Length: 231
Length: 361
Ligand SMILES: Nc1ncnc2c1ncn2[C@@H]1O[C@H](COP(=O)(O)OP(=O)(O)OP(=O)(O)O)[C@@H](O)[C@H]1O
Ligand SMILES: [Mg+2]
Image (cartoon, rainbow over the protein chains, first blue to last red):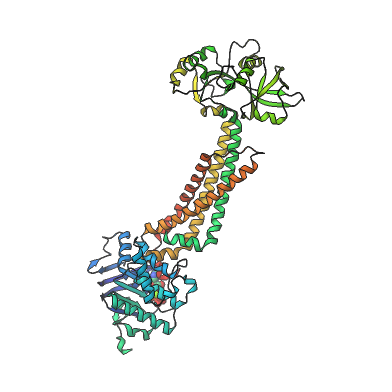
């Protein structure tokens, strides 16, 4: 699997004027690669995640998965939703778990979305919770879980559909440093294991050690930043 | 409805609130339609209980017995075709005075002794013998007994009470029977020329009633079509429809408003579902399914409560609930709720998936 963004522009209305959030941005991520994106607040990192994760269409440029363009107008909303379900796993800044679902059900829901919730899917969900060390809390709702536990469940949920691209938008922002490192390690490890491409937005320099490449978002474009070994 | 069902389970309080409102609306609509139905039925129950299937009236009389006048010529084709299953019927409203000086409204039905409406030998004997009156069974509760004498106010004719028969009312007055001859005497005096109001018909063999009507110079209506001639029937049924209509509109507004607010509150969840790859169809099915469950349960409870209340008041007020009227108003209510919710659907489908990156649920 590879992901290729070329010449991406995202322009939004800002009162009378327009605002270029992303501008002539290029990004290529290959299977098994773990890429970190850093940047100042308001630099457009979340917008980049939304565009890459097919949550929003860019104003210009193309998003291609395995060489196939997905934003050239050939896909309906429904097909894009299906593609999102099939290819992409998302981890958010706050865990964004459904309050009424148990940890286990957060994962089962992903399978239910495409009607594939069966015994196999349940076994996979249990397996993933085990991998993030949450099996013992599987029947708890998010209200009873700590921030770090929620983020582990969210990570397991992101992997539930065997995504070829995992996107994480500041997944450790609401966690303390050691919980943050754990989540980063889990993310990077699961990406390499499954061969998924992984893109992690972060602003904690100490966490970059797990990443193969670090890119800085500045002025709407990505440029190479310090490689992790230098941190 | 994976998420919808679990939301229902965990946010019981919130759903109980809107459920309670729907229960009340359903209760009101079922109870009011029970009362309105009872009122309407009070106008025609006497006619409804008679074993006839059709009535033939004078054309243009709008099923109004007082305006319809027929004679032997009109009866003959019916008699020839149906025998005793066609019988002349005279219907008029009278005041009668009891021995104790109390006056009562009666809707007096006159028919002949061979009529199929006289359903047993006692009734036939009563109609064939000396002039007298047979009262609806409800009038026995007023303390009137067989052997009492009732005076028909107006013609001032005294008639002995011969017995009690079918219950019910017509035009909100209890029904009573006399022989056709007695009825003709009361209405027209000695010079009745065999006139009566309508032909009561019991069609058991699918006769060609239309051509018989043509032949006899009458207009034939089914039993329920002829309810319209009962005094007040039209006004009562339209009042009832108006009340039900209003309740349906209220229900759909209440549900629409609730669902819209509920959708706004769920914006984050819906965005998240979409971010995880749910199609619009999935999200809409989930939301509507949840609403349908609330509607069905709440409407069911409301209707059950109304039936219970109906049983309690049925002695003192006219209350009539039929399975079909309850069923249809419940279905209408559920449908109205679903229609009300449509305003929120556009909101659901237009929530962008990248909401999930900005808001947490
Ligand atoms: N839909 C939108 N309409 C208007 N402005 C937007 C929209 N989405 C984002 N922006 C603006 O674009 C800029 C980039 O937003 P974005 O959320 O991508 O930044 P970020 O790098 O993720 O910031 P942070 O680190 O604070 O999360 C901000 O100035 C934001 O106000
Ligand atoms: Mg952001």
